[in-house]
Length: 301
Length: 246
Image (cartoon, helix red, strand yellow):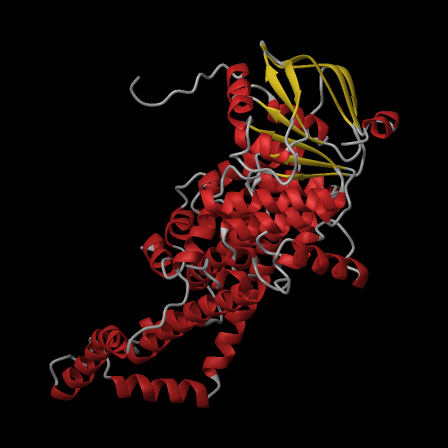
């Protein structure tokens, strides 16, 4: 279930690379810049016809309509699944009482801290291992071994070590965020076209100049793929981390709603996670537009 | 070329003497010698795998030679078979890659782009260029540095036939104007004859034959003697050209 969720979200833009990395099955080399480039090209903005838009929107709209109709007609048992308006009411109540923000802010904070630690570490290690042979020799084997451990499996250990305070939660999120960014940054830096590197050298670039003007710009597409996966996976880590012994957070809200059979609150929480996942995608897309303006321009016919 | 005495007196731009290079057991170059005078356009002809690109890479400083002497100026630039542009930099920045983007250099980049027929395209992204256009940018990038030695590594090989003819004319014109010493590495005999002052044929790791090209410029394929000269070079390359039934 873990992999499935990430995969479907990642598939939106960069099919093979992001999905495979999330599943943790593809070796580092396969997630290189070439793959990222291919993914980005195929996602180039195409103008959609009104008919196309209509058809694409039809099924989700129909499902929503069915939910409304089914709840109104009593086909759907309210105790099993709440009606849309009940979910709406629950949402309004959670917002007006401040309960939602109180918990959401805690969750956002956890992901921010965990992702900042894990993401920065992954990025830095990826650049170091990608650039320097020694760094690669020292770091890569260990990280490749560690990444095969499903990070969620260490949750019980962390709870035993650190108790139920913030630390195990942040560590799980950091661990989740670290590997996708490490893997993609490492291979992105490593797989910079040797020919373009050579051209850089011929035209006088050395050392830091080469890194700044050729290697990092060429690696950015890969890094962004890693960022997208990292952000998605840290959301998963958050959910799991908060479901065990969290005194606050969206996960805590869900667990307590479950205990009191508050179906409407449960659905609100699920929807919040969904919106969260969607926002992650939007943020990365925005970053892509800012950092890779040339990706949107296809080759001339 | 009409006053060889002056050029003979000038110090050579490139002096390669008795250079040897091997990868493991495979000897690529042995006892290779070649001299380029300032402003001279030399074509190095060879079959694929004959080591001509290796020699170019040694001259470009991208590879070390095992034995012998190599003297090449530091002001050397290369146009490779592929454009090798940095995808995330606009055309103008690609032209001055590795140089400070001062107003001066930007102006120089613009001027170089005008020279290769891409005036006003500074802000374009490399991904939006055709193969021929990208190769023109690569040429601008090589020329904007006023090189004393221009190394051309089969720069036309990946272009379509029509674009190739245009690019060859452009290179001939620009080399005539800027007068760098040029080493063109190619397996295309026609191209060598059309562009070069002198053709050196690479055989068994060394220059087997060196011939001055006896035709006036601008050159055309049809001039008297072209066919004979061409056949001679092909023979040196071990190719006897006769297509169709006898």
